[in-house]
Image (cartoon, rainbow, N blue to C red):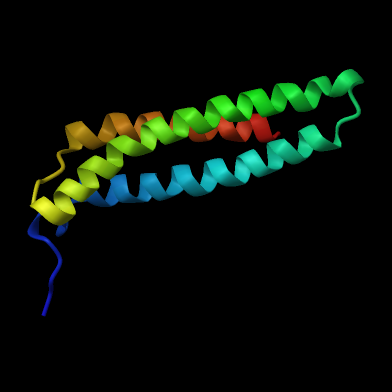
Length: 109
């Protein structure tokens, strides 16, 4: 017996959005860990590198949390209420997530 909601079956937009949601959580999390480690290991005067990195991480985390709320709403609507997700809804969120991941990776390097 298949209990998967009809709105999520074979929907490319649903799958892409679900994958993107996982990526922003995992990729941003790993990148922030790396960036924080770089800040901790720096020997800058007055811990300025550490403070700068931590401020950037706080901003990045806020962006991630704000962005994550949007796919959550769409995914829950599809999973629990049978609402379909259109490509036009998913694609801007995917693009925003890719930008956020790139920002996190840049901070970590």
